[in-house]
Image 1 (cartoon, rainbow, N blue to C red):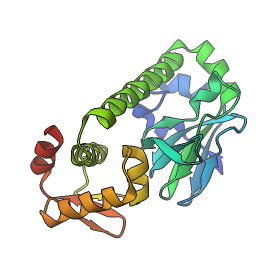
Image 2 (image 1 turned 60 degrees about the vertical axis):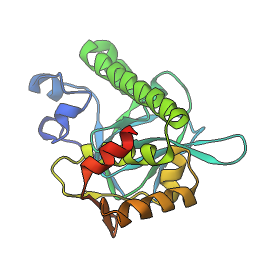
Image 3 (image 1 turned 180 degrees about the vertical axis):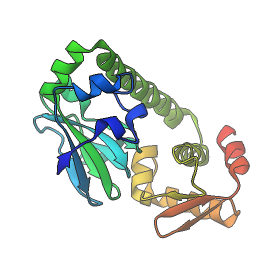
Image 4 (image 1 turned 30 degrees about the vertical axis):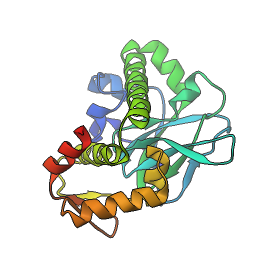
Length: 226
């Protein structure tokens, strides 16, 4: 572990510190710690005391909620630049489990120090609020999709949205299993497998060793709109 260099971080403009000047960053008064964790690592567990929040600089993370019947539901899939664990600012315990889907690089922030900082710097508090609002809007949109759209359209939309997070990549990092996709989209693993196989058979996409290439995005867009 080492302290983060927030001033020169590539994620600075996507972080909650984007609106701060260089002088303000240097005078934050809190430690931001760099972490690198392997795929499959549990970053925190649902129900644990919430002491830290995180910015995801590289890799992918899933946030998982335990259901009453023992099943798990993925509530969010996170990319570089995303924030998580910030519910600890208003709750004592984490509301879900965070698991690394690939090797990840994180910035870890102490929630007590972050709360004090957000009270001192309204621009930081506003940035956190905007991220929460966006996450809520995305969750509401997905709930509507789950109830109103065909399975093929759900998966096509998801793949296009995943690609949007990597605009410079032809070959996209894709560490998701069929089970992950099913839990996120409200489908069975078998159903996801059949749809992905059909998309590949049509020549719309190609997979190889944890990567994905979308060969015919227009075909996926048309399918997602039907």
